[in-house]
Amino acid sequence: FIAAQPSLEVAPNPASDEVTLRLSTPNPDRLELTVVDMFGRPVEGVWEAFTNSSVTLRYTVASLPPGVYFVRCVGSSGVTVEKFTVAR
Image (cartoon, rainbow, N blue to C red; front, side, top):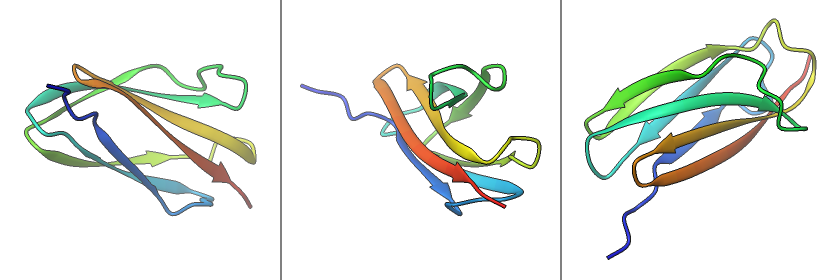
């Protein structure tokens, strides 16, 4: 049996002010989210989300310089990474 990893969608992409993160898991889970730059350096601290099946979060990117970023989502069933771009 292989558990399904958390699902993560980031929109809009590219973004200028804010992105919406749509997270879903097959089972209730506590997820840790980290936004990192293209070199893997965290640009913000880790934050947590709790989900029974899906949750939608908003993340402000207005203070980030234009460039490529990744959202890393770690749950009990695995790790999911999604790329997004900040453009102005």
